[in-house]
Length: 85
Image (cartoon, rainbow, N blue to C red; front, side, top):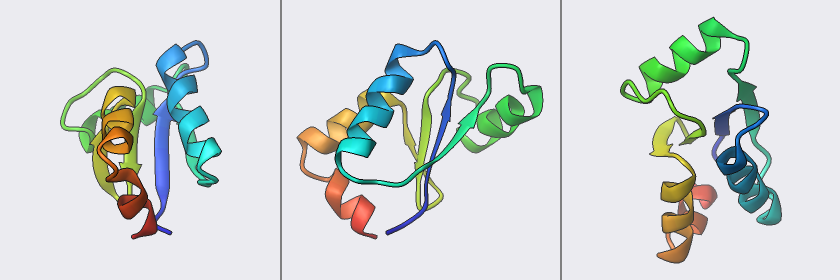
């Protein structure tokens, strides 16, 4: 399974939804909280093409997008293939 990373914030409902879907699928992920970490947010922005909103999700190093994009991949039946590597 490829490495899954999610940049998040503690009070973000979309972050919770994204993590809930990944957890439901049994996916282990690295969570990087950007609430009070300017360096982490700067890194996230650089990796996500300038996006400043959370969550920002990466699977196998590839930028997936946010919560909506994650759920779209799931609804299209494409998420499992990405998670399988």
